[in-house]
Image (cartoon, rainbow, N blue to C red; front, side, top):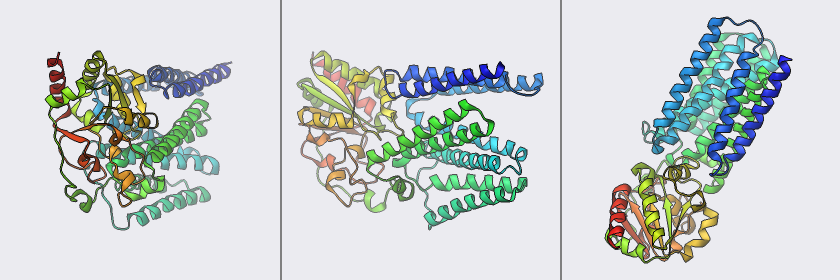
Length: 461
């Protein structure tokens, strides 16, 4: 009877995961989807504890619930206090914790299954993948947080990483084949997997961090699925498979958006920047515009498209952008937002940022939907975006971003670009857009200059 109840709850929890994931694909239902999946996870956790087979002392139960309470409080407070600019780091950090849990399961359970080839294979696979996800996510967090500012490429690092990867497979296969129960071998494999995760992410540049985060997320899901297989826990297996498959699909979608194969992302180190590219020098003259002149230009426009980028997040200017949108719409201007798939530092970063300032979901338009509209747009306002609007992706075969789909902002009647300076973006190259005849530069901190722009618009009443 207890077993039937446990399986029913696991089934219902799995359904909440699937429905929650489906709801996450739409901005309007994402919040409810997240809550639904969380309820399913809580139910699964309680069920696993209550229906645990074998005798468990009250002390152990107490420690379990204390650990859950501490983790809940720490996670809740961390998520509530984090700034939107730090959300990618938080995602990477939480993902790393999931990988660490999968690795710890392997370390704890290994000696229970020595001699059982199937179980040993599952344990070692989960431990290795979880360890790689953990250490790789920590390096990704350090890169996003600015602790590691440059991509680090060792001589022949591709060959070195490949040798270590093959070595991990061979070593793990040898342990399974021989049925060795030596903890020394286990910890050597564990350390090597951690080392590979570090070397895997170190050479990858900042522009590819969204792809790396998605890939590491899929690793964590796969490692969790191995844990579910080991314990015969259906909900853990289902959750791991969902996370792993969703992370893989998102990784492929991101690569497609950048027009780069996954192999090139991992081994190409795009975004590390090159001396030649970053020191290429100006390609012409730029025209500047001030808040006062831009206010007049926007005031007499019929259609305006705003292109947000990471600079918007850094300046915390999302609320000013919303105020600007409101003022323009009150004057009959049609306003929408163009969202590039890799804008920001993680998938959906700009969507979350703008949702925080209550921008309507219907106004957030994806690249393929918005690109045909630029030709009928009076003014495009680019705030903190760079490489995703660089025409070199279409015009310069020698450019590192050549072939990457971009937002066609140059087709608009006028293009205003807000940046702090002329410093290149992640790709380390000059942006051709800045020197186009229809482009004007609005220099300064996004929040400051947009606040001045809003004030000038109000003064035109």
